[in-house]
View 1 (spheres, rainbow, N blue to C red):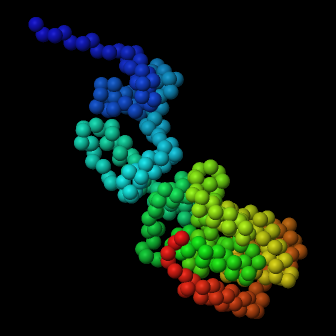
View 2 (view 1 turned 30 degrees about the vertical axis):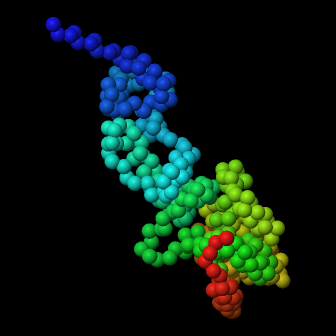
View 3 (view 1 turned 120 degrees about the horizontal axis):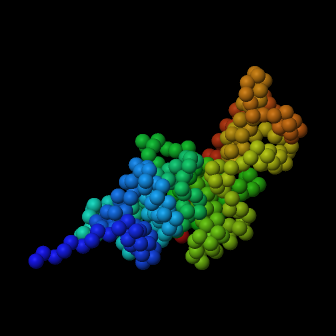
Length: 358
């Protein structure tokens, strides 16, 4: 006598099964190759079709119990969780070259294989997010996260620029040179400029600006509690602080300056330069200031031509009160050349620097 067929489980029964699965597993990530997973797939199909009966009677009950029909929400893993997974992978394997996994794992566990693939994709996206961060466009990475990744030994792939060097300090490579040499470079920079506000785009002295930006990011990550630096690293932070380094060398897209901020920097420039507000375009101590000054002249020209301009009467008055000159005077190009000559002096020091890191 044949065994009677089991009675099909009702929709209510399946909903209860789903609730129990969530209690036992902490998520709604039901494997597709199970009867419950197949049922759940059918529910998502009805939701995608916006089936009237399903949307009015059943979908609200599933949503009420916390189910998200957007799979990305149900399967989401926090950035911190993925970071810990990556750090553990590096510790266990000695590298971060996560291979693309097979579609099905050796033990036939499709869910495990899917999870490994998601991790692989996440790691690969880090490089794209880093390139976006370097360009100043929208990115899920910030200075703190980059510092955390670098702290465990993760290395980002360079920008896809067909071999052409990028114009930003952070995207140019930062050579590994002795820390004491960096201290000497900072001391020389301070003696020449009177401060240690190194622009992140300042690529001379073995990309001193990129190095200063990296150090600033690592310091910010430590102070926020995201990373725990070694005692040697903390000692280096202390040495930099005693020198007068402010750990504020961040890219323009991490530390945007308002118009008022730039104006205050201009006033400080004036104090340091015997009352002159003539900032060279290639002012090495703060490349952003030189570009901002150029922008003010361009906006002023647009205003005089009757075109749309961001320059207001109030801003014009403030600039003129500071002694700002709207017209480029003879010799301005020479000022830029003098800046380049001074930069060459820094590069003489660069040629003496070794490549070993302490």
